[in-house]
Amino acid sequence: MCKFIGDTPDVGLSEEEIIIRADKCIKEKNEHIQREAEESSKYKIDNLSRSPLAEKVKEPPVQDTEKQISNLTLNLKVPVGQIFNVVGVTNYLNFKFDRCEVKVTIVAKEGKLSQSEYEDKIMEALMQAGIKIIEQDKG
Image (cartoon, rainbow, N blue to C red; front, side, top):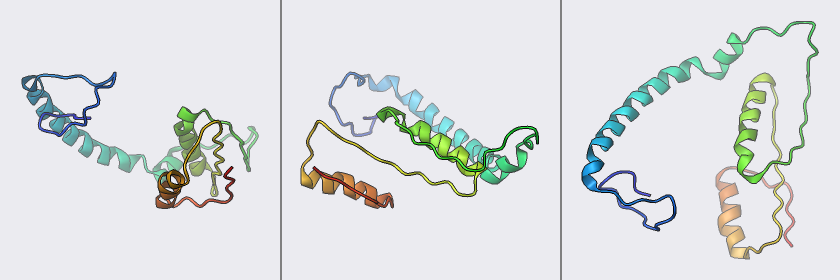
């Protein structure tokens, strides 16, 4: 995908791609660059106030009358496109608990994957991300 005039596009003409005139984009490109610079400096300032330590300090104490949860285990069945929601919950739990770990089980059925695809795409991606495979079953 090409965002700006002058970028080399990867043309596939899928549903979300459009063809536009160059003179319509030049002004927008300059405005976008300026906005990115402003947002980047704002992000750095905001990030300092949103650090995990700052969030722990700012949280109001929980009332003594409310029941406290000291251990939590959740076994989830997550729709494929919703895994990012689990990341958000995990980040929150990581701030609330000293130890928080995530175990993931991926079950893929009713399709085929070659051994080379498995090694090149799946195993390589997991290895680069530092993800340890505890158990695997290939059928």
